[in-house]
Amino acid sequence: MPELQAPAASPETLLREHFGQQLQNNLPLATVTSMAIGGPARFFLQAHTEADLAAAIRIARACQLYWCVIGDGSNLVAADAGYPGLIIQNRIHAFAAIDTSLTVGAGDHLSEVVLQADRIGLAGLEKMAGIPGTIGGAIYGCAGAYGQEMRDHICEVRYYNASTDRFNHLSVSECQFGYRDSTFKRHKDWIISQVVLDLAPGDPQHLLNTSQDLIQSRQRKFSLDLKCPGCYFKNIRLDQLDPQNLLPTFLSRIDSSQITYGKVAAGYLLEAVGAKGTRVGGVEVSHHHGNLIVNTHGTASAADLLALVAQLKDRVRQRFGVDLQEEVQYLGF
Ligand SMILES: Cc1cc2nc3c(=O)[nH]c(=O)nc-3n(C[C@H](O)[C@H](O)[C@H](O)COP(=O)(O)OP(=O)(O)OC[C@H]3O[C@@H](n4cnc5c(N)ncnc54)[C@H](O)[C@@H]3O)c2cc1C
Image (cartoon, rainbow, N blue to C red; front, side, top):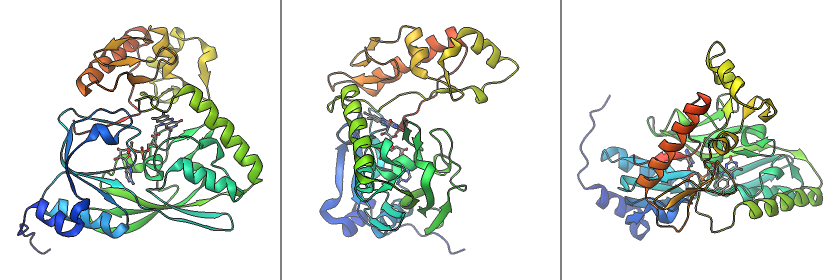
């Protein structure tokens, strides 16, 4: 192995040489996350091509600079202190359909891909209309809604392996998808760049009607200016609870009608412990939904949020004996 040499220039010089004015210093992460919380990223840039993505990560690694790739920040909570390294926002776009095979970029917006697929008569994504965020973020967290999930139609995922500096492919089984889970959560150095989906033929008008209905229903639940990251906690999966101890205790404390497809909604548990309307500083649990934490006036801090989260977890643990786990991802903590 050749010895690693210290770079001759600072990360800022190297990044600016490559990205010029695209490189931003101290961009507040509150401006690129739907929760609108988070201090400055030391460096911020958008990668529009695979070459730019790899180059930015290569420079960061050579300079031993922290780095992280984000999409639209719709499932992210960033630290008040910000991020001491390089944030790369994925903006890699692609859209090519051949028969029922659809190739999209990881930086494409899921909701736009859904509508485009509807229009050309490709079925399988229509119920995910209106989920905010990019394709990359949706694969990372196996996003889904109304019985459809990202994993359902994936053929192959192309990603950049930062450790080997190579692009590779994973099949759907290699992605190890689970409920809001994928192998990418365990390999933070694997960055999704492109995806091939295998969809089914469908009637464009019917698909568009389904998507438009769900978009309208979402708009009634989440107003466009609501500062939140969607559902904060994952639902409780019964198959993940210890069958000897925890499961029987938990089952004895809930209403069995609340079990759907082997899961119990975190919102139900939170509402049962009186979470709705609970407030710490600028963050509050929605009055309409126990699993929705909102930065009410856009002035909340991550410290407020973490205090509220700790309080909610504590209440649920005491009443039901289970630990809520975050669906949202933390950045810079
Ligand atoms: C109003 C609202 C409603 C929502 N409704 C739903 C819903 O119904 N169903 C649902 O599943 N989710 C929902 N969400 C959550 C969110 O939309 C999804 O989790 C979304 O897929 C996140 O995509 P993103 O691009 O914003 O990812 P980000 O929030 O930017 O990132 C999330 C994580 O993914 C990682 N990541 C992002 N891009 C890549 C990449 N290219 N390669 C590797 N890792 C990457 C980031 O590092 C981070 O850890 C909702 C959110 C909001 C605000």
